[in-house]
Image (cartoon, rainbow, N blue to C red; front, side):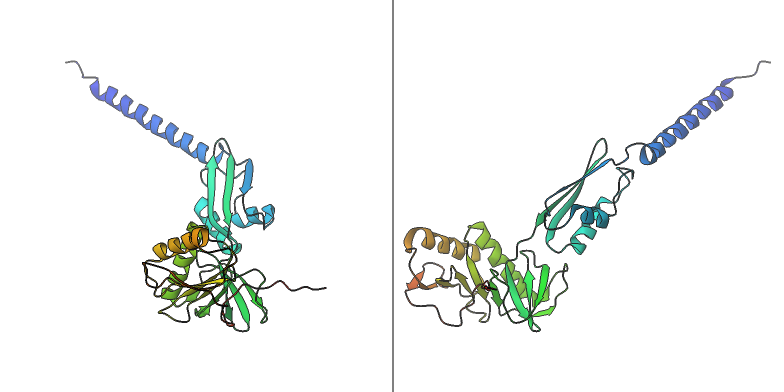
Length: 262
């Protein structure tokens, strides 16, 4: 009686399959350890800080593997360590390049706190704290928002409703390219104000239809008001703007003045 040889062939096929899997796993391990070493790290943006400090904080170094380095953790570490860096991305590219891309935050204003000032970004992040009563030069004052805490590099901890309103207002002003913002005043919930150019005080009423109101303010500045006009503009009604050509009140929020040290 002859013996069947199929089982031996099946065993041989299983051995081949096992060998293939082992070879494939070895190739994967090698690709993640030996192949694709990082040989170049570039920085785009963030000129405020030395490149070597940014790279050191990222935890990424040359000769690490391109695919096993922690890019998300590196981005978080950079944003936490360098307050003026926002929207940090760490990008891999073959054969061995890491590119750290960051935006430099621009302060939208400063809140007075504990005998000093807290500078905030457009994302509500604490960029810097200063001591003394002197308002930081060229930085708009933010009035009517109290900060519970202010740790550099961390989100500000204020009344969240007013902070969200501030960020919405600042974003609308940027969107319509309204420059020379001198101050924000949230002291009256029913009439938020913004000082533009230290000559026009816009009363926005309650914080509704902000995009529409700022678009109207932009149109008034560009098309209807004279560059020499000074006074108060009431936009609270929403459908129209009312201009009173008067001097700004003496307690109007304004920008920090540079001090002549000479």
